[in-house]
Image 1: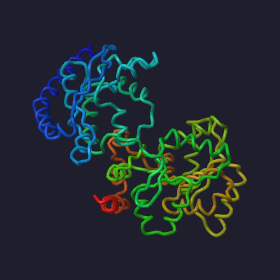
Image 2: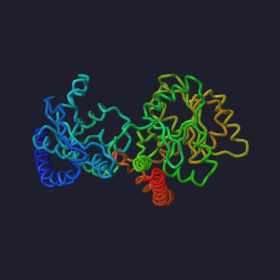
Image 3: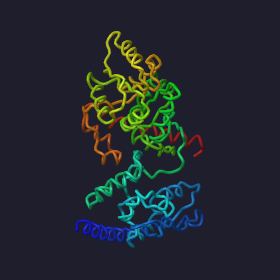
Image 4: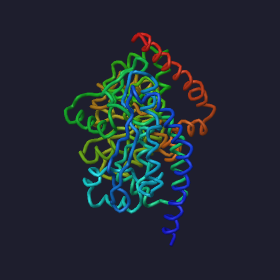
Length: 427
């Protein structure tokens, strides 16, 4: 009974909203696209898609061939050409919220276990859509569909729509990202999270000593004024983009960033990989006792994971040399260092070779999250790129300058870089 009411109410709301938007938006889209019809040749593209119960329907979109003008490029990237999809929602073939719309070929390739997505109409907005917008699409799509189906309700749908509105400014994934790119003079490894984990596994197997750093907008600002840190990043083997600010920078510079490669999301995936391979990990950093708490969490989640040892990030006198010797004696394959930027990266530059570890990773505040000292932002806030807001509210005295002032300075650097690139290209 509850599911029947939900389905009827959802259908009524979809029809009402689609009808309203068609009245408001279709004329605007047609007028906006009209001046480009001769030069850009817009046309209606039709795709056969799979709807509820796997029934086929035709999804239409007004396409704009890419052109040289800024207006043409903007229209091609905007949501205006998508207005015909409202007709499919009005007809009941699709919904505003639901599992991602699949074309007929994608639907035919689904495993039988993944076909439960067709118990509801497909939607324009889903968890996978949100996570792609904010570059945190680490889970496979089937997992996000199961999450939606198990929690679907009018409240869930409303929450997803509100989050979608908040995530719209981040833009849709576009183009083919390069494997490496530069932002503010820093060379970034532009991989997906699964590829990063696989690359770490390969480095361990081949004993290729590798230093990994994560860079967010605050790191870019620090590097601009700290030549030692800037040189360390230049010499690091892999530097990974961390945070929604780096995605925004990539969008402004037209250098798409694939995923938010932060250490906090990497940690459980790395633990699982090391557990499978029998490799070991050493945890160094944070306040006394915190690294041990992180190790306890990891052992509960991954019972077969080998923790080679732990040590706080506070040293006096010869403590640093003793810590390096302890890591070397432990035989750890991976060394995680949580001392904050730039200290952790400078420390790894000095000591990774002496520690004997193959892979060294500077992980920032990761230990505080997994050690239980600081709670992480809820999933819904991370899905709209608002994790930094949560950190600001947690520690406003410590974080206000980093986020309120630092983010503005970072964006100024990026805009200045964009203007310089445009001037160099004669634009």
